[in-house]
Length: 255
Length: 67
Image (cartoon, rainbow over all chains, first blue to last red; front, top):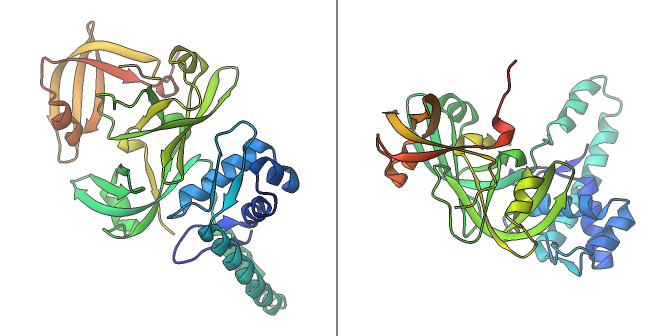
């Protein structure tokens, strides 16, 4: 899988680049989704994932609307597409050069480095502070202009991954770890991560409800709560909500 | 305080053991004990002390069952 890595940023795969290009051509997420053969939701999720991983969003628009509304690819998004296509061309040349190489295994291993994970929330962050303990370590990161994230990981992980202040890392949070509280007031709970936002999407299943919270700066958090909870709290698109999760539920990844 | 978490067990803090980063809080919930690991920072933020009434909040996805 060919992916783009620039200045240590994580991979954006070709499928997502094609989707971005389609948004640029069609000016809408629903039309772009149709053009690349994705469902509207899958396209919406993919674009959110891209926005969460970039310092500034690649796509702007009414991502919360049922039918998608208009969407535009930003300058950052256009730069991403251009870099990807340029790198793709150059890598093709490298691939041709290596085609005759007998050590093909190491070549395919290279592609697998652009790992994808099942965690629905992956945020590009900059480490701002590290508090050391004897076993555990608290890592504070800047997620966006408005928000910070806190992770508690082991001292060993911090040493092994070379996590230090100023380093760019990816924070992963499984959506089932994320809880919600309606309104703007942050709940008085011990969870370190309490992020205010606006509900931008709700998809109900038989038992669970998948809720997206727009937390500003083009970033979105996905929470899975029971349908029962979503109904009791009467969570609707456009309503304010606080997404919260324990710092021990944050996984850190480095490139 | 409305939360999406399905389980909130009312109890009293009976013990707090602070480490450097993480603290272990023991909560008496009607004669049974629930142990919680939270950050020391959270203990300070909530001004949590032995004897305080608290809710032990557990997301339903976190509850294991044994038979």
